[in-house]
Image (cartoon, rainbow, N blue to C red; front, side, top):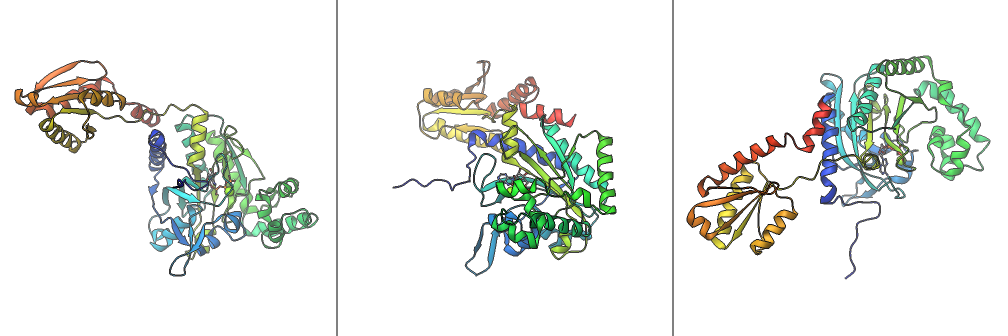
Length: 441
Ligand code: ATP
Ligand code: MG
C-alpha cells in the first residue's frame, strides 16, 4: 500500500526537537506574562466573514491564501490565517473590553495559509502573538515594540533589525491613495491582474504584492510618510522619541505596509538576514479601526505576531544552546514476574510524586534493560530480582558516577527521593533553569 505522507507545507515536530520548541514557547509566554499579558485560546476555525472583514478582502491572505471550505451544515468556514481577528472577536463576544483597560492578551497558535512552501514559509505554521486592546497612546506603541525587542534579547539573539513605519489613518490615506492611484495608473499594463483590481479598491495593497514586476514598479511609488496627517505625524514622532529614550535601535522603512488591512499608524517588523528571503521574524502594529469593524466599540488597539518556525531558524543559525531533552530520573530494571510487579508499583509511586520513572515493558533481559536505560539517559537505575525482594534490599545506582547505594526495599522510594534531591542540588540547576535564571536577572 502506498505510504501516506504529511501534506505539502506542513511539518511534524518530532520528539528529538519538541523540547526545543517547548522551551522557546515557555520563554515567550513567560515574557508575555511579565509584561502583563494573559493567555487567550480561540478556535482554529472561524466564520470566513471574520477574516474577510478583519484581514481585508483585498489582501493576499484573503484573496489567495485562506483555507476556506463549506462544512456539512453549509457554513463557510476558514482555518485561521492569523491570530488577531479571532482574538478581537473573542474580546468583543465576551465583553472583555468592558473590564479594566488595556486588555492584554497573548497566544500561541497554529495558522493556515495556502502559500508556496519554502524555507520559513509553510502552509501550517505557528505564531506567538500578543494584542493590547484599549489604548491610543503612542506610549503603548513604544512599550509594545520594547516588549518585542526584549524577546530577542532574552534569547540572546543578535543582528535582528527593527524596521518602523507609520501607515497613517483613513484620513491621511485618502490623499495618499489618490497619489498612489495616479502613480500606478501610468503602469497598469505591467501590474498583475490582482493589482489591477487593487488599483481601484485599495492601491496600498499593491505595495505588498509579491509579484516581481509589481514589486519593481512599487519601488518608486510615493511613500505614506509624506502624506501623514498632523495627528498621525505627531503620534509617529512620539513613538520614535520614546524608542530613542529606551535605546532600542530602529530604522524607519517607509516601504513597510504589512500584509493585513487592519493596520493604522505604527507598523513594525523585526528582520533577520540569516534565514533567507523570509526574513521577517516578527511583525505588528496598531489597528485602531479593527474592533469597530468587527462589530465592537470604537476601541484603539495594537499587537504583534512572531513566526515560531522563523524564530527557530534564527536560533539554529546562531547556534542557540537549547537545554538538553529531559531524561528519565530512574529506570527500574526487573528480572522475573514478581520483580516486575514490584518495579511497576515503585515506578507508579514515583510518578505520582512527580518523578520521571520508567520500567521495562518489553520483557527484555536485564542486560538489554540496562543498555536501554543508558541509551535513554536515565539518571538512576535499580535492578530488582525476585531474590532482592526476598532479601528486602535493593541497589540504587547513580548512572553518572557509577556509585551504588544499598537500601531497604521498603524504604526504596524515600531513599531514591532523598538521593535525587541531593543529586539536583549538586548539579545546582538544570540547563533549563540556567537560561530562565539569566533571563530573570
Ligand atoms: P510575509 O511577508 O513573510 O508573508 P506576513 O506579513 O504575511 O509575512 P504576518 O501576517 O504579519 O506575516 O504574520 C506574522 C509573522 O508570522 C511573520 O512575520 C512570519 O514570521 C510568520 N509567518 C507569516 N506567514 C508565514 C508562513 N506562511 N510560514 C511561516 N511563518 C509565517
Ligand atoms: Mg504573507
